[in-house]
Length: 108
Image 1: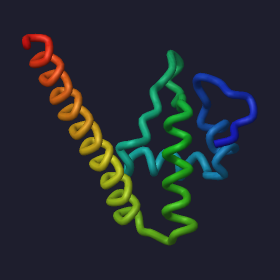
Image 2: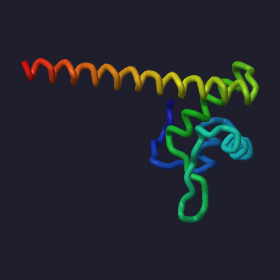
Image 3: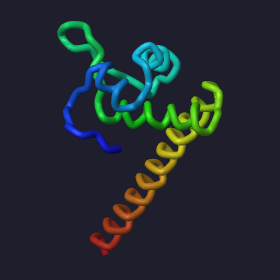
């Protein structure tokens, strides 16, 4: 993602300009996609992080370029989330296996 002036937080207007998605659509997508999680600042305004912008750009691509429905885009996003969980489980199991092997060698 190529964002000119990188900031920690972006307003909904900033995000609309960066992504080319109208604020009304961003608010709608926030309701539809649990992956978009802007926080509210002390004034009650939505503020987005880079992670949110990346997800918004992915959703935009799935809907506008690939022609998926909202349900289809949700499925794709949930599949990639589940793939990441599997990867973490595999890595965790491998680390535990290595720790057991190291412990066995230490005790020999």
